[in-house]
Amino acid sequence: MPATQTTSPGTTPALIPATPRRAARLVPAGLAAAAVASAATTTIAAVGSAGGISLGVSGAPIPVLGFAVLTALCSVIGLALALVLARLVRHPRRSFVHVTVVLTTLSLIPDVAADAAPSTKLLLMLTHLVAAAIVVPALARRLPAGQQH
Image (cartoon, rainbow, N blue to C red; front, side, top):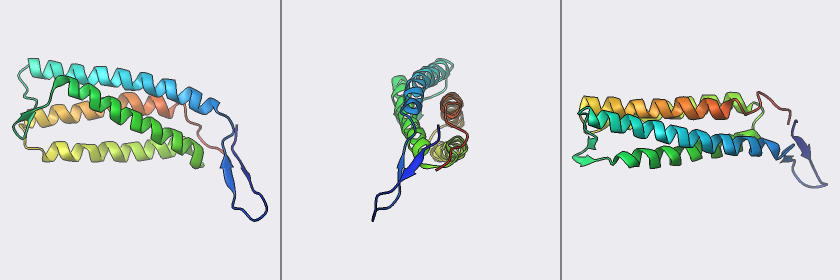
């Protein structure tokens, strides 16, 4: 359903969401994707650590469960982004994918610059890419391709 704009005399247009069903579809999917991505990144970290890859950055180890926590947090931020874009932009799916590709790319910069072994850097980058590969499509496919404002 398209969103509609309404105005009252002397006011600016306000966007009214066409239906709360969009959020009802996005939230469970986003939370499920966050859980799957958290499990995946934790597994990658645990397997890497068991295989001899250090999880240390700047001399401090990253706890394996820290991967789950940060993945869940960033996934929920992605869900919030999807909800905002679904409400505010003309092409939510395309906008979401473009923004998340940029954010995922930017998320690799600290990994590259980290004071860590090359194998650790690669493991960290892999976790970012795996999480994005799970969460972004799960949310994007539930966003409308376009809507009229």
